[in-house]
Amino acid sequence: MIARARMIGVLAILLGGAAGIVGSTQTWLEVTLRSGATEALSVPGASALPLLAPLSLAALALGLALTVVGRVLRYVFGLLATLIGGVLMVGAARIALERPLDAVAAVVTKATGLSGADAIADLVSSITATGWPYAVAVAGLVVALGGLWTLATAHRWRSGGRRFERDGAHTGGASAGHSAAASSRDKAIDSWDDLSHGDDPTAR
Image (cartoon, rainbow, N blue to C red; front, side):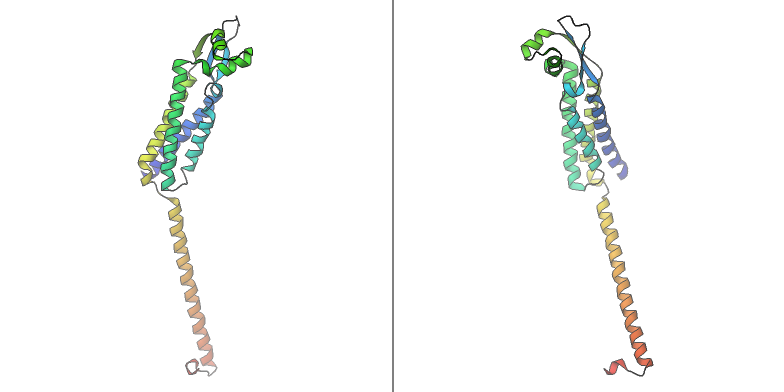
C-alpha cells in the first residue's frame, strides 16, 4: 500500500504533465475573420495559453523528482504540483468557456499584421473551441489531485536513502569486525612463532 501511494501520486502528476505537453501542440481555437477569409485561423494551445508548455514541463520534472526525494521535499513538490495543476485547470477552462480575444491575439496579428485589442475585436467574427482546452483542464485537475495526494500520503512513503544508509552502516560494521578479527589472528600467530623459537613474549 505504501508503494502504491507513491505510485499513484507520481503517475497522476506525470500523466497530467504529459497531456499538457501534447495539448500545447494541438489546435485549441479556430478564428473566423470578418474580412472574408475563406479559411479559419487555427490557434494552438501554446499560443492560447503561453504558460501551458512551461508548467507542463515543470509538472513532469516534479513527478520524476518525487521518486527520489526525501520527506520534506515531497511536501514542497506536492504543493508545487497542486499549484501548477490549479493554474493549468483554471487557464484552460477559461479559454474553453470564454474564448477570450487575448487567447487569439498573437495568431491574428501574425496573419493580418494588425495589433491592439480594438483592431482585433473588429477583425474577429467568431471564435470556436475544440476539445483540447477541455482536455487540458482535466489534465490540470489530475496534476492538482496528484499533488494533493502527495501531501496527504508523503509521510508513509518509504525512504530509499535511509535504507541505503542502514545498509552502508551494516557493511561498515561488518568490515570493522572482520578487521578486528584479522588483527587478533595475526597477533596469535606472532605469539606462537615466538614460542616455537623458544622466545617467551610475556618475558619482554
